[in-house]
Length: 320
Image (cartoon, helix red, strand yellow):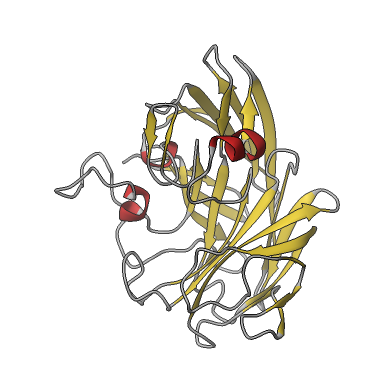
């Protein structure tokens, strides 16, 4: 697969246009750290390496190695108006086209775009690094290329790992509400099903715990999925460790939910096999739902009218 590297004095960004436009590498040079989660498996090309049974709905997990994926047009697998969509949609496992927009001492910029096979949309994004900047700028355009109204889920699957979180960390965010997902295994921390005030959250044993504290890998074994909502100002989060910080801002009118996912060596079965430490904070259009009804799709999912075009942007920042 082709790889695009974008680099300035502070950041080295690695992108895979051959599979999903993944950001598989996000190195902050002053700290010498790649922030992205990287599991102990190769980054495989879905067009060249595949199992004997390719009819499963969880191919995203088959090929998942960590990193930062663009997710469209769904999360849970479903039949959307006759289109059979697997877990986390199509665009993260297909090839994207790309063009180098700028390549100078002052600024580097690349545009990437793709159309999924089973859904009539085109997603375009431009990534920019400027000289002297610690920020990666991402400008996106999503277009409905059909003559019918569409509903979809859109997410940025951003996962962090070691060594960035070796000593744990702390989360700052403009979100105010927290709700733990019901559909999680027994080895979890937070009491599910009720909306609570962030960050002091009720645990499964009815204690109060600060959910903004990211535990060290050695502290506990658990799995957790929750959602942060109701942003007071511009939507953002910041993760701070004893080494550095990473932050990201986005449009809360499009990405209304921040998914809070942790896997800390708890899941003994597929796909984690008891050996995975991962922490993700993912801006999404809405919360996850296992079997979304037509009513909830029309109520909660992002709506695109015929031929409608949506523009949005995200901006990251690192400090040492």
